[in-house]
Image (cartoon, rainbow, N blue to C red; front, side):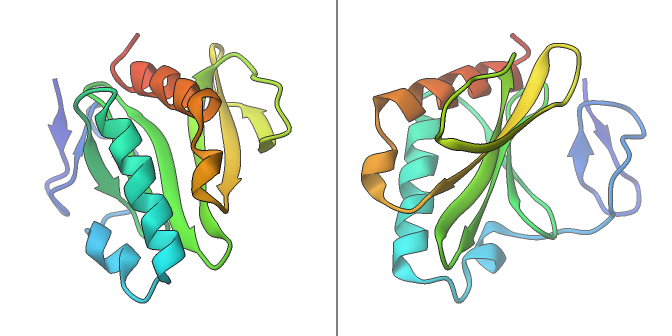
Length: 138
Protein backbone atom coordinates (compact mmCIF):
# COMPACT_ATOMS: atom_id res chain seq x y z
CA UNK A 1 0.00 0.00 0.00
CA UNK A 2 1.34 3.43 -0.82
CA UNK A 3 0.36 7.03 -0.31
CA UNK A 4 0.80 9.86 -2.81
CA UNK A 5 1.29 13.41 -1.55
CA UNK A 6 -1.53 15.51 -3.02
CA UNK A 7 0.78 18.57 -3.24
CA UNK A 8 3.93 17.23 -4.92
CA UNK A 9 2.83 13.85 -6.30
CA UNK A 10 5.63 11.82 -4.66
CA UNK A 11 4.66 8.35 -3.42
CA UNK A 12 5.51 6.89 -0.02
CA UNK A 13 4.97 3.62 1.82
CA UNK A 14 3.29 5.35 4.81
CA UNK A 15 0.23 7.57 4.74
CA UNK A 16 1.05 11.25 5.34
CA UNK A 17 4.81 10.55 5.31
CA UNK A 18 6.78 13.57 6.50
CA UNK A 19 8.82 14.97 3.60
CA UNK A 20 9.92 18.09 1.77
CA UNK A 21 7.52 18.63 -1.10
CA UNK A 22 9.14 18.82 -4.48
CA UNK A 23 10.16 16.73 -7.43
CA UNK A 24 13.65 16.11 -8.68
CA UNK A 25 15.12 13.83 -11.32
CA UNK A 26 18.16 11.59 -11.54
CA UNK A 27 19.29 13.56 -14.61
CA UNK A 28 19.23 16.80 -12.59
CA UNK A 29 21.54 15.19 -10.03
CA UNK A 30 23.95 13.98 -12.71
CA UNK A 31 24.02 17.31 -14.57
CA UNK A 32 27.53 18.75 -14.48
CA UNK A 33 28.99 15.75 -12.64
CA UNK A 34 32.39 14.53 -13.77
CA UNK A 35 32.63 11.30 -15.73
CA UNK A 36 34.31 9.36 -12.90
CA UNK A 37 31.42 10.08 -10.53
CA UNK A 38 28.82 9.27 -13.17
CA UNK A 39 30.60 5.99 -13.94
CA UNK A 40 30.56 5.05 -10.24
CA UNK A 41 26.86 5.92 -10.12
CA UNK A 42 26.13 3.70 -13.15
CA UNK A 43 28.07 0.81 -11.64
CA UNK A 44 26.31 1.23 -8.29
CA UNK A 45 22.90 1.20 -10.02
CA UNK A 46 23.83 -1.90 -12.05
CA UNK A 47 24.69 -3.65 -8.79
CA UNK A 48 21.34 -2.64 -7.26
CA UNK A 49 19.53 -3.81 -10.43
CA UNK A 50 21.10 -7.24 -10.01
CA UNK A 51 19.37 -7.50 -6.61
CA UNK A 52 15.85 -7.06 -7.97
CA UNK A 53 13.27 -4.35 -8.59
CA UNK A 54 13.65 -0.85 -7.19
CA UNK A 55 12.81 2.67 -8.18
CA UNK A 56 14.59 5.97 -7.90
CA UNK A 57 13.32 8.40 -5.28
CA UNK A 58 15.33 11.59 -5.88
CA UNK A 59 15.21 14.30 -3.24
CA UNK A 60 16.75 17.74 -3.25
CA UNK A 61 20.12 16.48 -1.96
CA UNK A 62 20.42 12.86 -3.09
CA UNK A 63 19.12 10.04 -5.25
CA UNK A 64 17.21 7.63 -3.06
CA UNK A 65 16.69 4.00 -4.06
CA UNK A 66 13.40 2.51 -2.93
CA UNK A 67 12.24 -1.07 -2.73
CA UNK A 68 8.59 -2.08 -2.38
CA UNK A 69 8.50 -1.10 1.30
CA UNK A 70 11.02 1.70 1.86
CA UNK A 71 14.06 3.64 0.72
CA UNK A 72 17.08 1.48 1.46
CA UNK A 73 19.97 3.55 0.07
CA UNK A 74 20.85 7.03 -1.10
CA UNK A 75 23.73 8.39 -3.16
CA UNK A 76 25.03 11.61 -4.60
CA UNK A 77 27.75 12.24 -7.13
CA UNK A 78 30.50 14.49 -5.74
CA UNK A 79 34.02 15.53 -6.67
CA UNK A 80 35.26 12.65 -4.48
CA UNK A 81 33.18 10.10 -6.38
CA UNK A 82 29.98 8.63 -4.98
CA UNK A 83 28.91 9.42 -1.42
CA UNK A 84 25.97 7.65 0.10
CA UNK A 85 24.44 5.37 2.65
CA UNK A 86 22.97 1.90 3.00
CA UNK A 87 20.35 0.93 5.57
CA UNK A 88 21.47 -2.40 7.01
CA UNK A 89 20.29 -4.65 9.83
CA UNK A 90 22.43 -4.13 12.90
CA UNK A 91 25.84 -2.49 12.83
CA UNK A 92 28.40 -3.63 10.26
CA UNK A 93 31.90 -2.93 11.50
CA UNK A 94 34.13 -2.04 8.58
CA UNK A 95 36.60 0.76 7.88
CA UNK A 96 34.78 1.11 4.56
CA UNK A 97 31.93 2.86 6.37
CA UNK A 98 32.92 6.34 7.49
CA UNK A 99 30.00 6.62 9.92
CA UNK A 100 27.37 4.20 11.27
CA UNK A 101 24.39 5.31 13.35
CA UNK A 102 21.24 3.61 14.65
CA UNK A 103 18.19 4.42 12.54
CA UNK A 104 15.48 2.20 14.03
CA UNK A 105 15.55 -0.59 16.62
CA UNK A 106 16.73 -3.05 13.97
CA UNK A 107 18.44 -0.87 11.33
CA UNK A 108 21.53 1.30 11.19
CA UNK A 109 22.50 3.77 8.49
CA UNK A 110 25.98 3.09 7.08
CA UNK A 111 27.67 6.04 5.31
CA UNK A 112 30.28 5.40 2.63
CA UNK A 113 32.40 7.08 -0.03
CA UNK A 114 33.34 5.26 -3.24
CA UNK A 115 36.24 6.79 -5.13
CA UNK A 116 37.22 3.92 -7.45
CA UNK A 117 35.25 1.23 -9.36
CA UNK A 118 37.17 -1.60 -7.67
CA UNK A 119 35.61 -0.57 -4.35
CA UNK A 120 32.34 -2.04 -5.69
CA UNK A 121 33.70 -5.50 -4.96
CA UNK A 122 31.94 -8.64 -3.68
CA UNK A 123 32.01 -7.47 -0.06
CA UNK A 124 30.35 -4.16 -0.93
CA UNK A 125 27.92 -5.93 -3.26
CA UNK A 126 26.85 -8.19 -0.37
CA UNK A 127 25.97 -5.09 1.66
CA UNK A 128 23.97 -3.69 -1.24
CA UNK A 129 22.05 -7.01 -1.43
CA UNK A 130 21.29 -6.85 2.30
CA UNK A 131 20.21 -3.23 1.99
CA UNK A 132 17.95 -4.03 -0.98
CA UNK A 133 16.31 -6.76 1.16
CA UNK A 134 15.58 -4.06 3.76
CA UNK A 135 13.86 -2.03 1.04
CA UNK A 136 11.75 -5.06 0.19
CA UNK A 137 10.62 -5.36 3.81
CA UNK A 138 12.71 -8.37 4.81
